[in-house]
Length: 113
Length: 113
Image 1 (tube, rainbow over the protein chains, first blue to last red):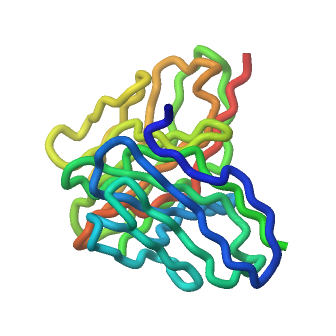
Image 2: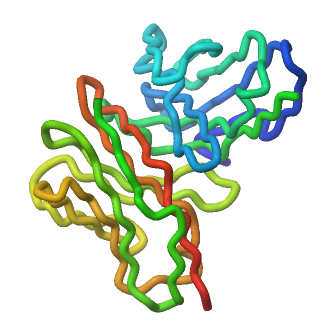
């Protein structure tokens, strides 16, 4: 089984819909991250969490929210999806006190029509 | 704020040839530096990292990178490329209070047989 699992792997939805992307990990890591990848732009940090009670905004948090339901689970929500949020989304974790993501999920490809 | 530039969007090499991928960063002090690899349809994998000390860093899969402060560079090298090395490579720089990496736009490596 994968250490970092993202669901769904693919999602097509319409403008204005609320969407939740799920991430779960079996690594036992406290630190989790959500990134967005657009072609030719690398990865941009959306939100990160250093433990269950800690949530921090990244570079591009507008239009997104997160929930850290447990150590192992970190969900990303788009309250009202818009087409320019079409992208590949990655969840990642890091061990100990490292702030550098080391373990990535395989991504969720999100298309907003 | 820190930034990172990967000057080459695509690099093509023949299998067995040597490889060097370029990375330049902008930051006032010594940052943390990273290289990640992304195979098609997968998340990122950390190849190597530099925090301090020896400026030549060894990573996984036979890769190494050299930190050159005078050139603000952290180039990735491999002496002999294998077809399985074809992937997208991302340089990242971590600085500021959190040291969470900022990613470059990536270099796509194509390996010819």
